[in-house]
Length: 59
Image 1 (cartoon, rainbow, N blue to C red):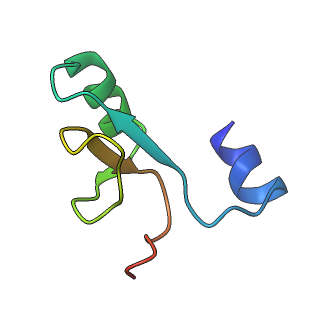
Image 2 (cartoon, rainbow, N blue to C red):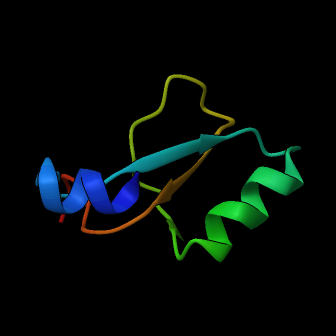
């Protein structure tokens, strides 16, 4: 799915919004190579945001 989004849809980035208490989702995002994005917009200020490739709108 990530490869399709990046190469077929040509999306610059994907993000995962993870509840801070959800250790399994956090570890999965990290295993997939995502990096925490502290500056990313989020609906719930408690969520952790992981960016899978590319840079956010802030650069």
